[in-house]
Image 1: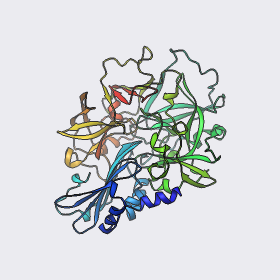
Image 2: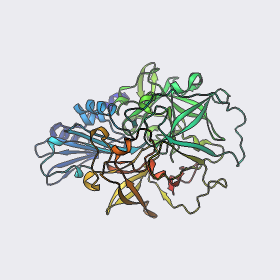
Image 3: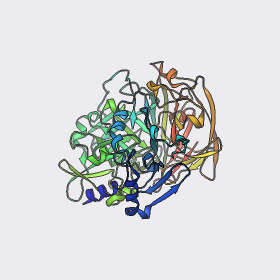
Image 4: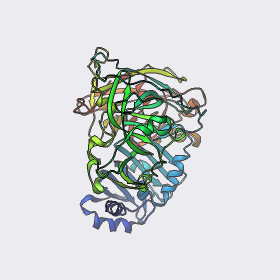
Length: 141
Length: 390
């Protein structure tokens, strides 16, 4: 029962690189905890999850989720990163540098950065090839 | 939590049997000073890791194991030890169970990884202090396979090579590793604790008392906080020795003196201002560098891919930022060097100028502790935190 409810909650998110239609479908289901913030160059879909993570999905004018960010409890990255989760796991395990607590992955297109401590994580992931023109990674928080 | 490459050597952990029997009663003059050392760690190759030894005993017995090479981490809460480092004692520790008699297994969530394994009860000894019969995590992915929901958080660190340590001693200012959120059922539970029938595991709500506990908060004396003290390092070095003193203002060696107190918020953070912008900040001995902001904000170039995740300015850069809790603030001066050059000296493990990007937060990692006494006040009821003072 518990597993089912968790899966339902998790499937309410579109994944990185996915289509805006899945985000829009989420809005109906999660209206109480979601707000949409339009900006000049993209739209931010912001959700506060029940487990205590503030998630922002950045949607381009073409309707693609080009970035996601998170802050609070550790999110379900498998859901949030979608097809990029495997790249994330491989990159973490192969991280060439001597780094602890915090991660910085850059595969050329897929970039993921995360930091924090137990009980608090903040990070972001984005696709360089999908960034709308004139948008810099600084704005993705 | 920890990733490092090119371990210099894989050195077998030196484990010795120690006695930790006897009375738990200690006077207020109990030995409250624990030696700590920054070095390459039990696996070798660790940069800016600070390690110590912990005694783990079957509760109420003198059946104990001293585990060396345990990472001292003020950014987490509770003791976690590799099953392989516990020897025969590990199998004798009592397994925590739920009301149905199923085993409680934990998915401890760090920033970029998890540790998975059963929650067991142990007496934990540090210096002359003892936390009696507290839940700890035994890191062990073999007894119960890691649950799918735990894998979704990130990769698991489950052995000496991946952890770079024989365990993690979480002595930050919270008493439990998760707290109130993990007492909930349903989707509001962040998924630290699982109940496992055989190898079938489900997220479960547990009481705060059942959660893995910060051992310091359970000492008979000196339980209101810790003082982490490391000497300054003028440059890179192979090792640096210091101490943790238990208690704040409880003995004549742990007075807070003129240190300034900064209270943390409910997440365990403060505010850090840099170039007129304010960011979420925190102080964490388990982070091995100053991790802050990004290249476009700091002007510090990223390292080439071989040292990806660190900054590589052509020459050392002096910077300053200020920490604030809304009432008190102070300015910190620090220097960032070139990580590729720092790591080129393979014998070194102490790097006072190591820094790297972290776009969302300002992480005052281990170099912040060099040349300071950092007081960490534990939350009530053990102390009057959560706070830092330095």
